[in-house]
Amino acid sequence: SLRAYYTCVLNLCHTHEVVSQGDSFDLMYVNPPLQHQYAFVRRTQNECMLVVANFVDAEAEVPVCIPSHLFSLYRMKGQEQTEWTDLLTGRKLVTSWQPDGTLMLDVPAYGGLVLCRSLAPSDYVQDAEKK
Image (cartoon, rainbow, N blue to C red):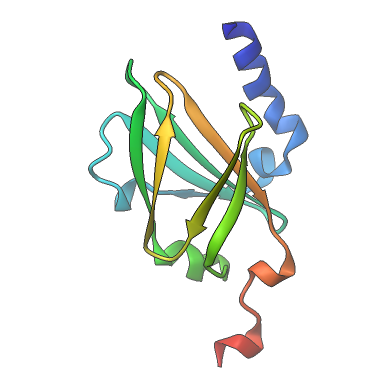
């Protein structure tokens, strides 16, 4: 039901610190073809969230480019295989998470994806690796 959906969405701020306290990174500047969808990333030291909303009455396969600037700004490493959990459905999704990579995501009509993953120290570039 619609009520259950919005209850789930509203409760995310209580169950995931990244919603209420994370840094935001707007992805629209590298995704100009998206006219009826919106995408952004939120991140804390321990969690990363990718949100994609679809504002049309049909499911859409949405290509979301993840710019290298996001990785350098947060000192994050790219990964060949990254497991995400959609916090709205509980569904698991494995994608590549690479600088300047594109994720192809199926987003429901008038809905969205709230993909979340934990971050560990190994997900970040260490000073010794930069040299």
